[in-house]
Length: 328
Image (cartoon, rainbow, N blue to C red; front, side):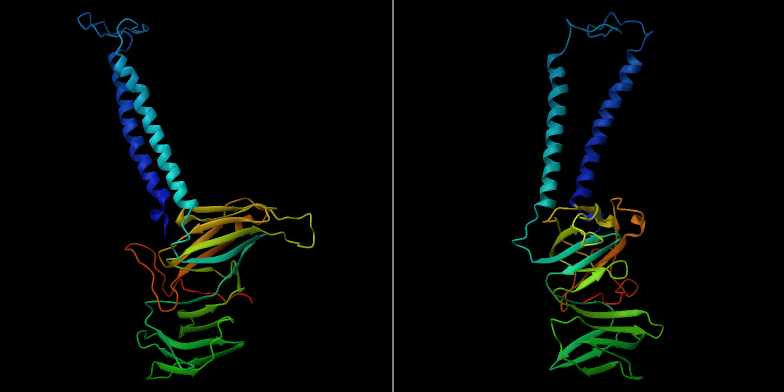
């Protein structure tokens, strides 16, 4: 869902097309009139429709042409307005009845974003050469498709473990107990510690905080983000937070956090391409406004894939999940 996929990008192209046509006609007639009817040009007495400088042709005017000068621009403005309103409706009145939705709460503080999961998300990297399979309480890690795989780090329950991939064998099996209510993950690294592959379960209520953690969301689902501006000191009832704005430049998408608004604001969107994209706060929110940044990472649910378009930024080992797993 880069900016070129959005309705506003398409709307911009349409507005630009009609603006160029209107500009060609307007400036074409302007320069023609300047050259033809400029002061100093001798009147053409043989032309009954000749226009003299400084004289309005009251007795010799073209009613049809004058009406067209009003009617055509009016229709054009009305049509462009309807087109713009339709685009706004497509963005803000998103259809969450026919599409699968994913709810997440986004809290803005001075000066970071907090993402609270209202439902669980089990996701896994794709096209990395590493595959995971779960068979009767055993996780089977096959790194045969990625020759750089060297170590595996796992967290199940509250127990973390790390081990090397055996020399000569890329197939590793470990006994584990999956718990959907716990933050769990399997990460595969190369010999230099670069992350190659991730499987992760983010349970309901899990929190991720920028800038160390990205906002992780599934692709091909309508994301319903409920957004709140939070005070630094919650014990002070006079402090209701400050104005922030959640902005993803590559998606041409922005929404404000309104302080004091109990219900918050709502942002709905559907990412269709996996990748990692920057987040910025687009509203001045204090002395450290410039450091209020983060990332949104679009991933595929475990066992599925995302729709990739040619030329679109894809997720890979260089952009995948270099974070510490957030908070519980």
